[in-house]
Length: 196
Ligand SMILES: [Mg+2]
Image 1 (cartoon, rainbow, N blue to C red):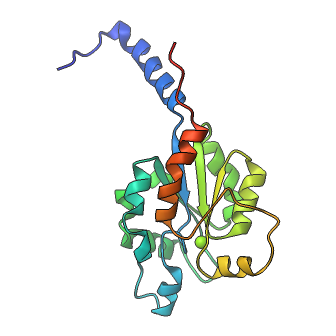
Image 2 (cartoon, rainbow, N blue to C red; image 1 turned 45 degrees about the vertical axis):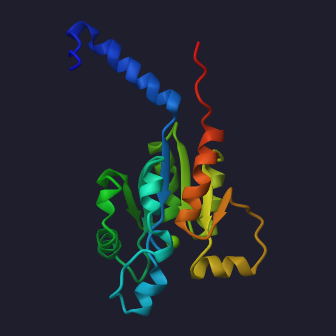
């Protein structure tokens, strides 16, 4: 068993840990709820009785979690409520993947972006949404963010019908697609530290 450091060495060890975290650059996947984590069309089709992820996303959260910290980012819509957003998260067992402090639900997603970026500052942030207007706003606020467009559901379908000036960094059809692409992007954006 490793001996506990003496008191005088405590601070030295703390600094060492901090340095390692900075060099490794933490990765955050900030995931929208509707049409990203949850098949929202199915929720409405079944009169809110079936609240579930998309079958093609099976295993994706485990894979993403092995690559970084998972966070939730969502908005209460006119016909929705905070409670219903929380119920959706509960149904998919989100607390297995996301800490309560990393769940961000507000009345206005775009207005909340700056606060989110401040919170995860210094990290490599993947912002994952089916709404291209949200991704575009995110890139305007912080051009270092990796915008990931999940191209499914009604908002994406409407956006696909007209030409878009904004090009997201990554476009996928589902979360497993992101889990496949993410390691390459992380490797490119967070080069291994040079050992001297
Ligand atoms: Mg959505």
